[in-house]
Image 1 (spheres, helix red, strand yellow):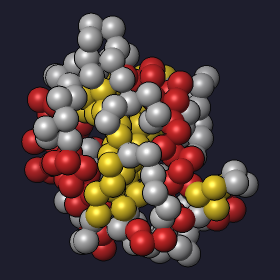
Image 2 (cartoon, helix red, strand yellow; image 1 turned 135 degrees about the vertical axis):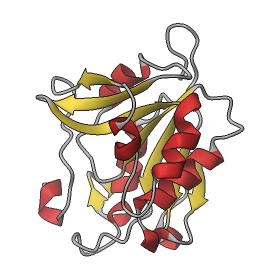
Image 3 (spheres, one colour; image 1 turned 30 degrees about the vertical axis):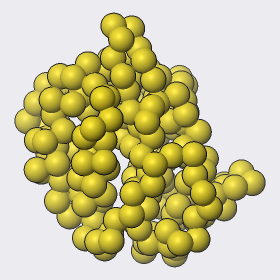
Image 4 (cartoon, rainbow, N blue to C red; image 1 turned 90 degrees about the horizontal axis):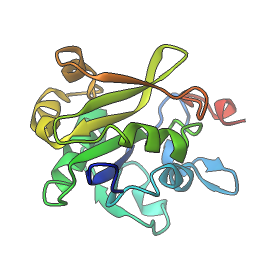
Length: 187
């Protein structure tokens, strides 16, 4: 995705977890006639390139319209997926990346576009819903190494954001940022 100012925005979908509380890998959850991972890619459809990090159940995911990276150590938590995804984008030429976890089915392409409008190599932004921080998150290329360094265990970009200025982007009028922690959350 190119935005005003010519910034190139990549998409990164984190979909490697086993879904312990969910009862199955969330990427494989049936949702709206397909799988949750396929639905989530639609929100990132205007980003280029799109990287999807898979782990648990990866062999059961059908071909996706994205670059797929396999996280062999997915049991170590989301941090390893974020690091792998950012590394996969290193040579992409993207100025920024929109990061989306697979378990936020209410996030729309409109919310992604709203964050992407802030894209620049030094940008940091996160979606909010009625003032509550949520997903997706936009990370400018200049921050990728710092984010990766602090992404350990089940920790993503939050510790890095806590120590750096970022923009909150209200998205409640175009999306729902609720996490799907249980199958009934998809209803």
